Image (tube, rainbow, N blue to C red; front, side, top):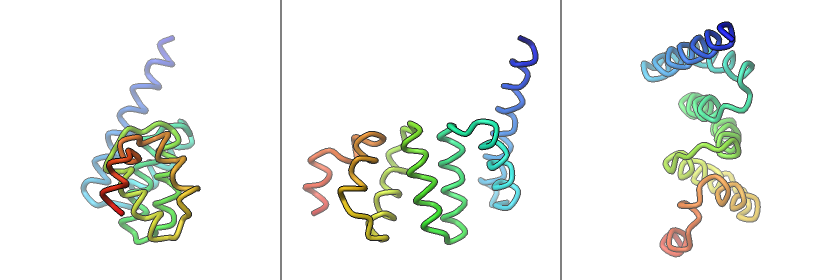
Length: 120
């Protein structure tokens, strides 16, 4: 039981370190640490979201969109991320019938009828 608890603390410390590296602009080290964290916790939406942010900062919009789609599917609750994902998907020409199910599940506020009627 003690080992499992200490493993969780270590993971939190590594996530905090990765967040600090990303915030300071050290993309290479942040990317390496987030990828390591993704190996340990492949369903962590925060890790996927961060990898998407790194990809976007590096100019890789397709990778950013893939990572953010994964984060949304993993249950992240972040309206700003959903909006960014929607914007990149629309720019990439992702059909609405492919885009909408992702947003309905992960970001219902983005898919509300009032949102779409005001953006069209």
